[in-house]
Image 1: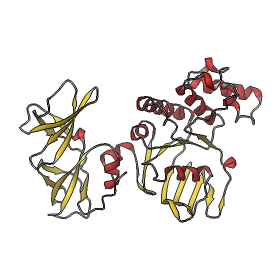
Image 2 (image 1 turned 135 degrees about the horizontal axis):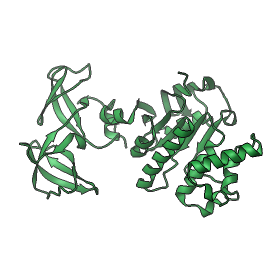
Image 3 (image 1 turned 30 degrees about the vertical axis):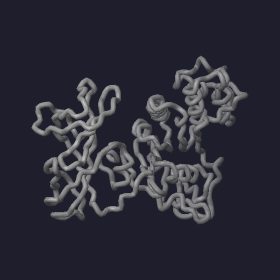
Image 4 (image 1 turned 120 degrees about the vertical axis):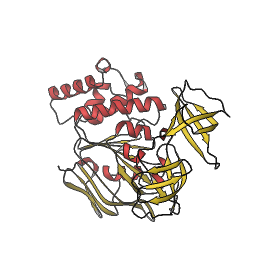
Length: 355
C-alpha cells in the first residue's frame, strides 16, 4: 500500500540548535498518527516541517508519493493540500459557522459547497448552529467547527497542534475519541501533536514518542505502554517502578517478588543486573494471596485507589485496586503478580528522563 505520508531521516534545525534529528516514520491513507512527548522535544517543529512552515536540514518528506521537502527545496504550504487545527481554533469571528466552514471551499460551486457544509455539520451534530457566530459557541463546539473547517476541502493530511490543550482532562479525552471517529468516517489521514498520553491513546493508530529531538519509539499505544523500547519511553509513558533483578537465563529474571518469565533483550547474559518495569496493573489485589505488603500511601481516583506498597527491601511498588477496597495506610494487603509483558533494562543504560 502507498503511504500517505513518509518522513525519512528528517532533521530540522534553527542555526546551531537541532530541534529534530534523523526521524523516520510513515502513515497509510486514513491512518491517524501522533507526535507525543514532553515540552521542548521537537514535536511541533516536526509538524511545521510536514506542513511546509519549516525547511528540513537533512532527509525527505513526501505526501502521497510526491516529495514536498528536501534540503534546499520544499513545496510551499498552500500547495501541499494540508489542513491545520491549532490550539486557539482560529475561527473567523466575523463569519457565521457555515461561512467559516465554507471558507476553504471556493473551488466548489454553490450547490456542492452547501452540501459539503451540511454534511460536515451533520457529522458533528451541529446543524442547528450554522447561522451562529463563534462567540455564541461553547469551547467544545468551537473545537468541532475548527476541525470540520479544516476537514472541509478533504486535505491530503490534517495536522493538529495541541487542539485540546485549553480544555480539562476529561473533555480532552472525550473529544479525542470523537475526533477520531469523525476522521475515520471521512477517511482523512491525520497527525496529532500532544504531550497528553491519554489523548494520544484515545485518538491515534500509531504513536511517535519523541524526546530531546529524537524518535524513541514508533508503535501502537499498547506496545509503547507494555513494551517500551527504552528507559525514556518506560519513564514517560504511564506509571510504574523499576524492580532490581538478576538475569537467570535468556527467558527468566529473578526479583525479590519471584521469577519473571518473558523475552529478554538479546544482549542480556546470565548473572547480569537489570531492572524490570512493573506497572500498577501488573500488581493484582488478592486477599487470599500469601504475599502481604504494607500500604504506605494511597490516592483516591474515583473508581480506583492507587496504593503504594512497601517491599521488604525498602523498594515500593504501585497497585491499582477497585475503590470499594478501602484499605488504611499501615494495613497489609494481599497481592499477586500478573506480568504478561516483560520489559527489562540493563542497570547501566543511560537513564535519560522525560522532564
